[in-house]
Length: 138
Image (cartoon, rainbow, N blue to C red; front, side, top):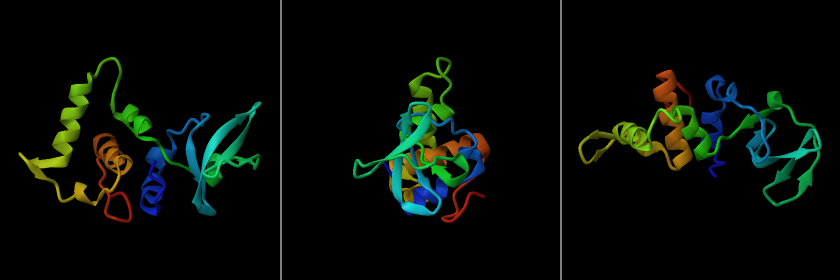
């Protein structure tokens, strides 16, 4: 799971955060502690956290103070409409996004160092027609 500063910045946009429906196991960071990824834990009707070290915390949770870091499968669900889309359709679209010419990688997509970053860039291009400048979505 990518928890780099770049991925956190990429995720911190209204197009992604507005889609977050908190669920147990989701990964997020608190805006004031960006270097401590947390995983949501359903705590009998309230939310708690499990830290990367496995320590459970019952701190107050709020979407307004957190940044959701979608897993790769959550990003894929944003662009794949089951059961209408078959996997090969999405794969072909992703391949076309990565390749500018046959057997040539896109310079744009080379900046992404994880599958999460690549899939997020794909989601933003497909759904919102935005590209990552290195610091923001434009």
